[in-house]
Figure (spheres, rainbow, N blue to C red):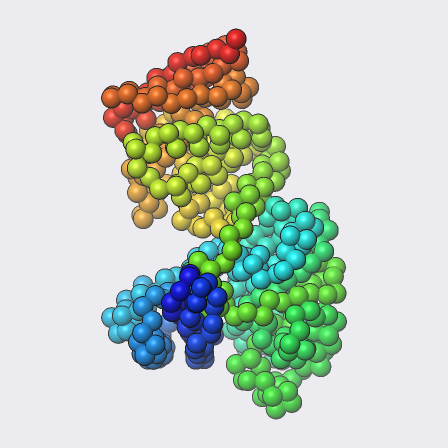
Length: 500
């Protein structure tokens, strides 16, 4: 954002926060920062829903935030919620109630959208990030509701998951256990949650560990508040001291707020266990608050990084694990990019869908690893379980459907696989273009070196520059192009232009 005021409201599992900043020539200056404690997550993590009393308290807090924004005449703002609302069964009621009472429209971040924002912030806030990303690093966001972890190695994300053991959630799960028993329970639970991360990390050398999230305030409170570098042994020694203390005793002995004292043991156990699997003693934190990260992200103030390459590298890493045909995958990606760009006046889709088609191109044959005869369904199942920051759940739904339907099947026969909010006609458009792109390398031999697209009144011609006889490609094209003709009402033909 170049100039003006921008505000952000963040509804977390343990508190509501608001930040208002002014931008002058692209430089950000903090105007107002407010925090109101309200443990929304206590309701969600114990009852599964947010009580009416808490909903009303939430409306009062957000009404106050709205008044403050009106006072500053803030016209541009976003209001987002994370796990405390995201995991509540009555979240739609909460959103509707807040809108009618305050006029604030809440957006619930999916876990990987939230993780992407935090990861983008990390890339922007670490001065030497180019050095960090060359080696292996682990990034963990430890918050009240979840622990989200990214493991990156040589600019490839090799693990990404939002795990359900945030500090407040842990404390609520084991709230009836005695004080010393809690630490044992926390350790066992976190060990189980980190089993897959531990397996992944065993294959790479982690050089750097970074933590973010609401819990970093507790770490900074105890260990060098102005520092960004810490030693895990200090954390472990503190855990030994407070292991048998109650929350009241922690408040009395250390001056911590009661809400922080309640989750202190869970925080210390989580940090200790994550550090143990990395084999490192030193870790770093990024001190900026989540509202600040949200504000910089939604105001488009973060510098653009080559994150698209991160996604591609990560998918290629997974592809290698599934023994896919890399040359075919990249060729289909090249083909689908050209078809999408050349036919924009026909499909009328924004460029964001090209990105999803490119992801589908790299991943569509992952399922061969399980069983070639039903590989499209197997690829679909793999993608449903694959998580990457920046590829949000709603996007992966679209990608997985394109992959499922990339062979010659009737799309309408697969309606049971479509989530309620996914547009079937949109999927048909994407699948129609993808099938054409895939058919042009159906033999996996890259016999079509290049092609041009010629558009006439009622026909599209794909003129292929061939290096060999393309019997399989032509046969596949004739079958797979039928959906294209039915969806767009335009005939599509393949012509050969052999390279002499």
